[in-house]
Length: 115
Length: 115
Image 1 (cartoon, rainbow over the protein chains, first blue to last red):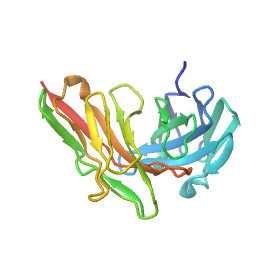
Image 2 (spheres, chains in turn cyan, red):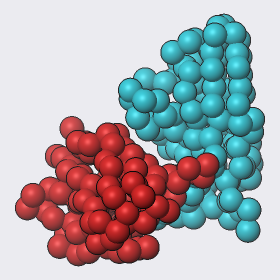
Image 3 (cartoon, one colour):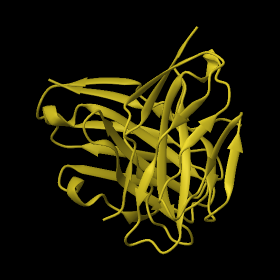
Image 4 (spheres, rainbow over the protein chains, first blue to last red):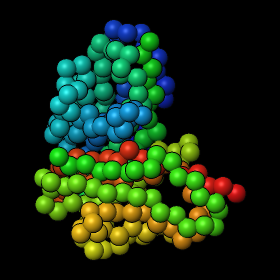
């Protein structure tokens, strides 16, 4: 069974550009998460989908970050416009039935550098 | 608010020696915290190491153990004898069972094994 896949693995963007990160969850999983990881802030939740419905939109990340789940097997995270402070690793994870305790399966991440 | 604290950013242990990685939590808005340890081995994605959802219980996996101590609000990770293959970054996290409450993450502890 394939795990969570993320593309691209690395992305370099100029300030002000729009970038789209992609994620394919584990087949059959109902929950999908987008996280941002930086050395200073650690792991922060950006978005959470339950059966394709947006459950959590990340509060402070709302204005320039938009996650979508077009179908049960594909999600995108758009950052528009990018800023240098967005440089981070973006992780996608999925879970069969999260409920606050099920295992989350993580992808390898996309390392974003904004110049 | 709710938080997880890992006081050591890096721990160095000699091979075959014992290990303890500290984790304490604050769960002011969570009635029934669930506690997790996730691990990221070099070149791999984050993966669940163990979890405990009941206070007083112990979880174990791959020779690692952690006991959910409600009195001291701690969930320290221990191993009796480490191996070089245990070199990784370990993350403590908490959530609330029965809800879609997000995972609250610690800052991570990098474990370095000396041969």
